[in-house]
Image 1 (cartoon, rainbow, N blue to C red):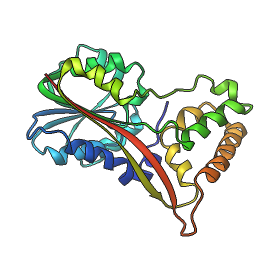
Image 2: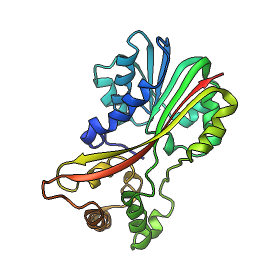
Image 3: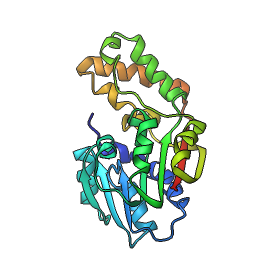
Length: 257
């Protein structure tokens, strides 16, 4: 799956805000070694560099386009191209004091295996901090799946990449055996979006990509047209030109025992 950093950064402030709030809840005054998993174009890595200016920071990202954008930024970090799931499973040296991930881990299956692997790469007292969307029952995502399942393109989209997010209590159970303290919470943001079809623009940078990348030409256009119309009904544009887009996210900070 390919990613477009320019589309992703259309709503850069809204996408970066959760990273700021997550980093603020990591109660480590001066960690020396950090890694940002799925760093994308570097917006979340910039948050870490500002929060801990003396730390050695790495940014791991599988998308060459996203990584090129990150490398072109002024963010102080070592950029690494690689798959987060493979990195977690590998025997690469651990002992990170902070492992951070902003809106990426939901693309990796089996969090019951993934999170213990990440916790083992932490130094004692280090923190795993991650944030994932948990709005997959929202109209934006329900209508996306319905459009994929009910059109002439259904067979081609049957195995499009899906997301993987557990309930908060499940994450608590997964992390507890490795943790001295766990902070779990959910936040629903009410994004106030501007422009034509802003919810479509938002999901075009993330959740919609596994679907549209499997389609071509007129079939892709027809799929997007039908989905756009459904979004307009679910998220009507207000008289003032704004569109309200509720978005729920789950946050976790676990300190390794």
